[in-house]
Length: 202
Image 1 (cartoon, helix red, strand yellow):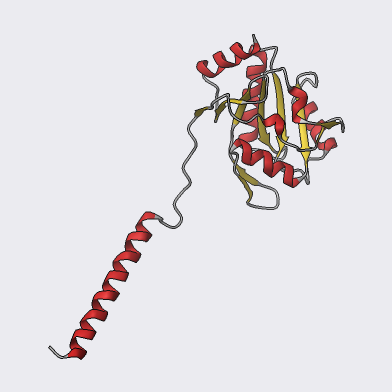
Image 2 (tube, rainbow, N blue to C red; image 1 turned 180 degrees about the horizontal axis):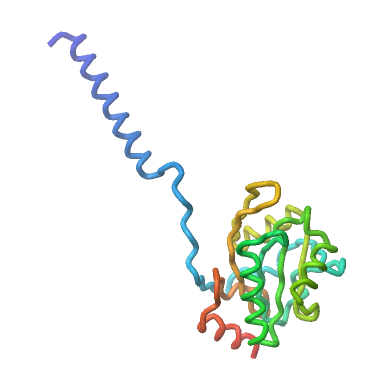
């Protein structure tokens, strides 16, 4: 066989190998694949980091400065929502109101994912519209950076899809008295989750 023929065959083999490798890699990471949904109930190790160690600066619906650590000593359920949401956020708030009727010692925190529109006045109106007792319910707004930091800590994913709408995870997070994540729920809290809440409250 002539050297030029051998060289041509080698090049053909190399191109074929590269094509196979590209196909294999593409099949491992398909474009446009939907993100995996979080399990409905996610149990967490309570020895982990306390969310009360975050340095965020927040304002509540009355305009008062708040830190997450101000809930230390109480069981807390927290959801990240935005007040203009008409889909999953009202469902999350309804679920939290159901839990509030079952566990009087719990406290409830709603943190806005849309701080540009959800100022203190808007949060106060939202709380009044939904009859959220300010002795048990706190609505928070803060800087974009603090919202992103808290969302990353809780595993809440969100992004703006239009000027008015956000796509986001619909998680309710249960904290123990020291601000450690005990459980996260997407949707309705089951009996096991409510049992954990009652145990913390007692």
